[in-house]
Length: 561
Ligand SMILES: [Zn+2]
Image (tube, rainbow, N blue to C red; front, side, top):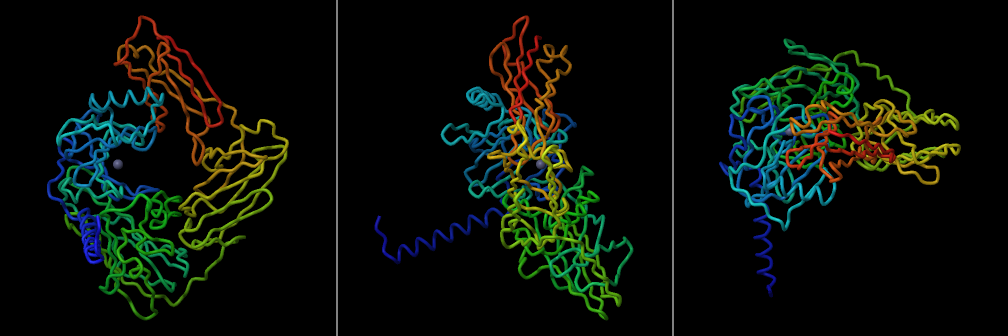
C-alpha cells in the first residue's frame, strides 16, 4: 500500500492515540468485564502490591471457603488458555487465560485442572518426561467460557495454605494490574493501620545514620541531623478477615505540600528487585519487620512512585523551625489514616562514626574487584546507592571449606546477580563435585568449573566458601500402607544442599511398572506425590525413582506396593 507523507503522519498519530488509549485502559476501572473466579464469598489473605520480602505481590490471594483445598475455580472471562506452567516452587501449578480485551488472567497454586486441561498437560508431561513444564499454547487452542470450571483450588508451589493467587495482566507487556480496578474485590470498611513509625537521619548518599522510633502518642521530635526521611510499617485489613494486607496509596506532606507519593495500581516484574531499595533492607534482616521508606534513594526508579524525580521525600531540617510532616495512607475504598509529626533540627548534631571499609562501590557503574584468587563483577544499577564494603579472602590448599570469601554484609541489598569466580586449590581431585556455598544460609550456588576456577552468580553479599558435594538425594516413603487406598503415593525427596543461582534444583523420574509417570513435587515441603487414580495397577506393583542433584549425585530406589 502506498501512503503519502500526510496520510502516513495521520496513520502514525492514530496509532499513537490508539496505543496511549490502550495504556490508559489498563488503569481505568473496566466495570464488570471479569467475574469473581470463585463461587464463595471473596475474602483475601493478600492484596495487590503487598511488600513480600524480595518482590511485590502481583495479584490477590483468595482464601478457600473452608480452609482446605478443592474449591471450584472458574474463568473470570471468556478466552483461550495461553500458558500452563508447572514448577516445584513459585506458582506450583498455574493457568493463564488470554482474553479478547488485551488482558490475561492467571490462576496459581491450583490442585488440579479440569479434565480437558489435565489430559493435555499429562500428554505434554509424558512427551517431555518432566513434571515441570512451561507450555505456551499458541496453536493448540483450549477455549474457555466465562464462568466455566477450570480448576480446583490448591496449595501447590510456594504457598502456605490452600488459596487462589489470582492475577490480571496486560497480555503484551505482562504488567500485572490490581484486580480491584476490575471490581474483583471484597468489602473494605477499615482504614489502614500504622504499626511502627520511624524518622531516619540520612547522610547525603541516603545511608541511614540513625532511626528514631516515634511512639503512638508522640507528636514532635528534634533530631541532630541535616536531613531525614519517614519510614513505617503498616497494613490494611479488609472485611471478613484479619489478614494484614498491603496499603494502596502512600503520601507524605511537608507543611501541607506533597513531598512523596506512591500508589500500587500496577508495576512491572522487572521492577521487583527495587523492593530492596524502597524498604529498609537492614532492618528486615535484623528484626524481620518491613519498613517502607517514604523517600527515594539514588538508584530507585520504579513506576509506583509518582514524580519520583521531583518528590523525593527527603526532608531538610532547620534549627529553629518546626515543620509539620504528615503521613497519609489510603486504601482502595478511600478509607484514610493520617498522622502528623512536628520535626526540627536539634542543637546537638550527632557525630558520624564511619565503619572500616576497603572498597567503595558505585551504583551508576560496573564494579570490578579483581585479585589473583577471586573476581567479583557487580553490574551497573545493582546497588541502591554508594556502598562502602569490607572484603577478606582466605586461601587454604588442604582444607577446601577454609577457602572463604567475606564480601560486605548480607544486610546490604544487591538488586542484580553479581558474577563471582574463585580459584580452586590444585590439590583437589574430585573437582567436578565442588560447589560454592553461602556460609550464612548453607545454600549451594553450584558453579561451572574450568581450569581450576569455579564461576557462578550470587544475589547476596556475605560469606561464601567452597565445599564438596558427593551426597546423593534421599528418598523416604511416607504412609506406604495408605498408598493403594488413597490412590496417592507420598514420598519425601530431599538433598543435603538447597540450591540458588545457577545451581540446578533436585531432579527426578518416577516409573510405575516401568512406565514414566509425573510425580508432583513441592520444594517447600520436599513432598513428592504420585496420583495413582488414572493408572492401571496390578496386584503387585513396582515404583522406581531416580533422583539427581546439581553435581550429578544419583539415588535410585525400587519400592514394591
Ligand atoms: Zn499470591
